[in-house]
Every structure is written in C-alpha cells, then in structure tokens.
Image (tube, rainbow, N blue to C red; front, side, top):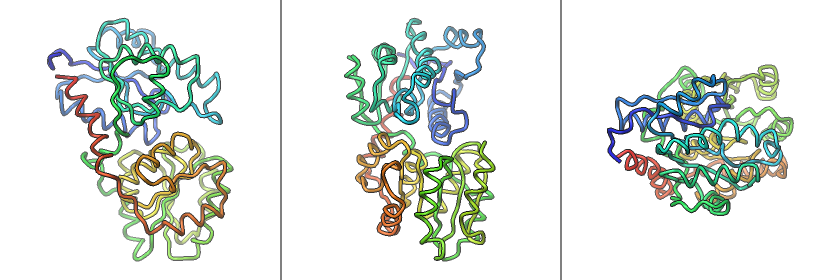
Length: 354
C-alpha cells in the first residue's frame, strides 16, 4: 500500500460515548499525534454519538481508512457495570456497527492496541469476528485479548503489544499548569497523595476509612475526577472528609492538566485503569483498588506488580491501609520491554500506512 493513497481517516473509539474520560481521550490524542507525524496533511474525522445518518454514511464512503482507537471499549464487559443487554447493545451500535458497515467498503481497517476480554457475550461475538478478520492490522494489549479473538474465530494475524498510553513520555503532553504549580508551591517536604474521586458509595467509604491513618501525618492530598464532573455536590462532600489545610481539590479539564498534576505526586490511589497506568509510566507508587478488577489485574500482573491491584469489592479498608503503608515508598518502574511493546503499536501503524 502506498502512503499517498491514505489522506482521509475515520476514527472509532470510546469517546463516541465517553466524551471526556481521561484514558479514552488520552489514547485518542496520542493516536492522532502519531498519524499527523506520519501524514502531515491528513484529514481525520470521528464517529460521534449524535451523528446524523448523512454524516455517518459520509464517513463510511468518503474516507480512505478506518482505525479503531486503542482502548477496552470493544470488550471488558464487566458483570457489575456493563454486563447487561443494554450495555452490549450500546457497544454494538456505537462501536461494532461502524466497523461492520465499513468492512463492506473494501477499504483498509485497523484494530490497534485493543483490550478485548475477559468476558465474551454472544450478541457481540459474530460482529467481533467479522471486524477482526477484515482488518489489515490487528494488535492487542494483552494475551487475554489475543485468546478471546481466537476463541470467537479470528484467523487473522494478531500481534500482542501493550497499552498504548505507556508511550506518553515520547510526546510533549506534560507541562506546568495552574494546578501543578499550586501543588509544587504547597508540598514542601510533604508527600503528595493523589486520590481519584469515584462516585460509588463503596469507593468513597473504603478509601476515606483507609486513608484516615495518613491524614494526621505529613501528607498533602490532591483530589480530582478523571472526566468532566457531573456530581459536583458529592465531590465536594467527599473532599470535606480530608484535612482542609492539607487538601487540594480541583476540577478536571483535560488529559494534559491531569498528567501535569500526577507528575507532581508521590502516591496514587485509584479505582480506574488509565489513571493508574499513566502514574506507573510516571514512576509513582500506585495502588489500584479496582472497580473493574478483571481488566486491571491483567495490567499489573504483566508489569510485575500484581500486589498493587486489588478487587474493590473484596478488599477491606484496613487491608488497603496496610498495603499503602507497605509500598508507599516503592515507586513502580516499568520494564523497558513493556514500553517497547507499547511503541510497537505505532511502529506497525506507520508500516501499515506505507
């Protein structure tokens, strides 16, 4: 394939529904930056949740290639959160349907850095098989995703790489913002503990109880969300559980802002996957008390820190405290081969364009 044949690209990813989520937006930004570095005059469009039928068809017909943005939106159907018919239908409409329709155009399609599994729902299996077998390039971020694709009937070549967000240090995404400057000016000799707000009663109760032993010591607490906050009242109530004079709470604005803030921290407490992954990349002491444990444990097992991921449903507040006390001074160091595997996604994408 000659590079000059591809100038118009359509992206499909989790931002079609989760428009402000930190991990989803970051993965798309990294992909767009890479594409632009390869094809400077590229035109990129995206499938959006409220597209008109005309726009939808235009993207299918008038583009040269279709790329699935890295992420876990095609799979990881968690029982408690998204293991329902309604959620499966949502995935089918917003994520699978565009690829299915595009597979009849004869134009190239890419599945890049996907996390698919560990659950398989029959309503999606046939669609997933069709998309994977049609794609000119298929890369997945873990062995579990590879095995699921084989299970549903994918006979295409599948490359096992790593989560694409782990290449972020190669991009100019971290700079000082107003919030990071404030943290730097306030922390002095204190350790900075980042706590992600997650609006479930289980998370709020457990993390507040677990962190009480640290609140009387020399810690500065930083609290935010990883998306546009629609639960402002609950967020403020949560922050009031921390020492007022040692707590800095702010509203999430963008991935760049959150990355800059995380860069100023020492310890990261999170129930979410990508807040934890980028904190590992930044070399922080990370604790993932995971709301979606099945996908989170895959990552921490692979990087060699299985003890840093616990099932939020099963871990007690006292166990959380003991774990933080044990490892708070041990920062995570990612194996170099993991970073190289993550970069391989973009290396293969560049080869695809050529």
